[in-house]
Length: 158
Image 1 (tube, one colour):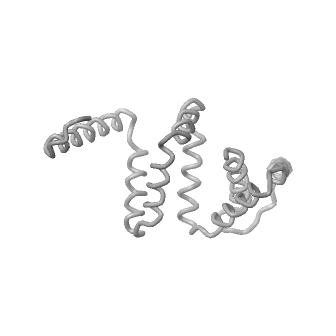
Image 2: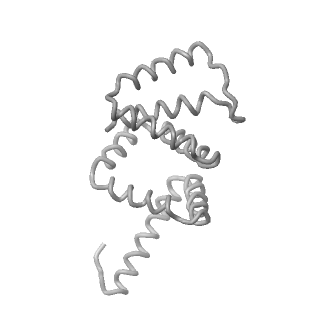
Image 3: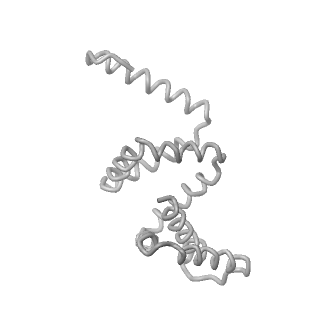
């Protein structure tokens, strides 16, 4: 699974980074050509079903509107900016029970009305601009509000 994800990411990154913002192909530097060649060889070394999945992912990428591509590039840069330990912990979480919840949320997001998706994107942008301390305080307020709501409903508990 991780090999498929990695291959898809590399293939996607190669396609994305090989084109300037106006969509016209650019001539990669020799270093870039060598990196792209290595990624292509890694893709070709994958079993056929994993290679097919990587190609489908590339097709899905090409079908995305420019603003969605920009948002995904931003997310990728944020992921790369995370410390290695934090990335490792996030990968572990996704391997556990959180994976189904993440998939459900993603599905709900993708099926949501465009206005709702725009609202979610704006909220995420604002969240990213907060300092760690501001985020911590907001989480505490949200927990307190949820506990109060549960207590009012007679549910109690955390």
